[in-house]
Image 1: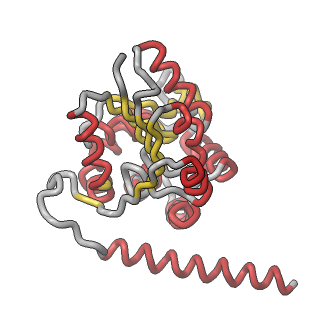
Image 2: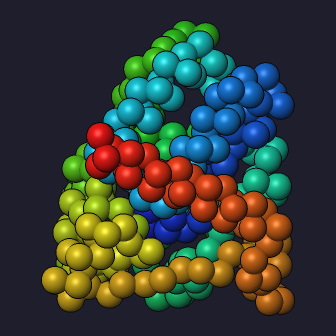
Length: 264
C-alpha cells in the first residue's frame, strides 16, 4: 500500500486564511464592497488571535454562501489564478515547503485537505507543487453560477470521511500516513493517521497533542515561492507590522469590553 501526507491549508501551509487573503482582489474586481472588506480584515485578525472553532466556522460558511450566490465560478477561478503571485507567494510557510518536499522525496502522495473552496485551494496547491486536493465543493447551476448550496463541505468529520474514502479507493495506508493541522476542528483527520502533527496549534489542539505525545511544530518563516528559500526571509515586514498593530488594538478593545462586563 502507498502512504500519504495530508496538509491542512490555513495557518499550516499558508500563514492566514486563504479565502480572506483574496478579499482585496475581490473588492477591486467589484465582487465585494469595502464594508465587507473591512469585516473580512477584522475576521482575519480574530482568526489569527483565536483560531477557528465549530461555531465561527459555521458562521463563516453561511456568510460565504450568501455572499457568493450568483457569482460566476470561472470569474472566481480567474481572479485567484491571476492573483497567486501577489497574494499567496508572500504568505507560504518555508517549513511547510520543506516538509512537502521531504514527503515527495520519500515517495508519499501529498494532499492538501481544506475547508476552503476548491476554486481557491486547487490553484494555490498547484502553485506550491501539490497536485492533489480535498476541498469544499460548491453547487453551481446550468450557467455555472453558485447556487448558495454546497455539495461537499470538507470540514471536521467530513474531512476525515473524505480521507478514509480516498484511502479505501486508492490503497493508501493511513497507519503509515502523516497529517498536519493547526486546528482542533481537524482532530478527526489527525486521529485517522499513524503520524499526526499539530502545526501552530490552537489552545485546544495543543492540549490534545501534548496529552497524546504528538509532535508540535511551530512554523514561522514566510517565503516567496519564486525564491524557494534562496535567500533569508525578513523576520517582520511592513505588512506584518500593520497586522500586529491592528491585532494589539483589537486585543485592547476586547480587554476593555470584558472589564466593562465584569463591572456591570
